[in-house]
Image 1 (tube, rainbow, N blue to C red):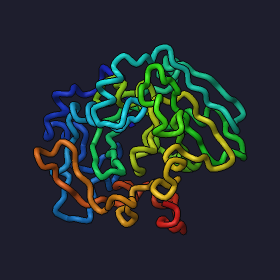
Image 2 (image 1 turned 120 degrees about the horizontal axis):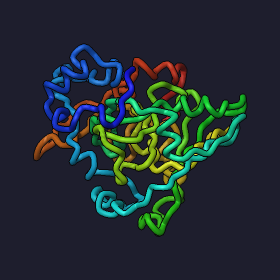
Image 3 (image 1 turned 180 degrees about the horizontal axis):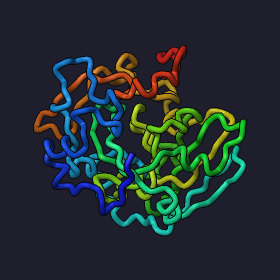
Image 4 (image 1 turned 30 degrees about the horizontal axis):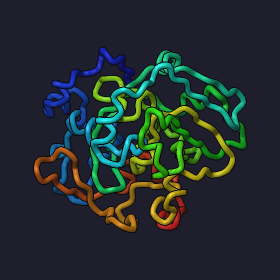
Length: 303
């Protein structure tokens, strides 16, 4: 898979030309960047040609980022002065070689590559985004997890002075998430440094965020400061806030509804005045790649 520098990524105006985009990235033949069945749908009438990249303006102005407020426009309106330099990330816990890296060191050690992933929100909307990032397993291998490392815990920054949402007990701050070690080591799981060929905007989780494309978007922690390998399953922020609504696994599953919303269909952001709804695909369309991680598991029990 080719790696890109920011300057080498296709310009935004080219992305917005769907035919050129499909031709340049080879999506017509099925790109490994998106997963072989991303566009597979329960509705045969929903094809690759009907799904396109979400416009940059929607990706960067319609966000869930409660550290800056609960409204969809709060992150872009309130995060522009958020300082992300200097920024260090600690990788520790059940590892042989714990390390602390600056963002400059991370970008030097782990060059970003382009991944076109679909983001599916538990609220029932979705976007298709060209992310820049690198597999999480690359940084985990650097620290050499021990045999006790069964899970990976992700901790976001705590900075209520800059993040107005953290001044209120919406969640137990700082934001925490977790993955099983095999999920974290999967090649589809990435750490994101940018999108659309540009540095990651503050409202999208700058300077470093997680992206796990087969899970609901809230699993993809933003503004990470600590990646900790642990022996016991961590309790994520949303699990603690509402355990009957938000499970540890949070795999996209059209057959397991959120208590307040059906997950059978999703609304595509940016699809016009009335955004179309399309059938939700198991594992967000990445089943060929990740279903084997859950062989024998009752995914209604382990939701």
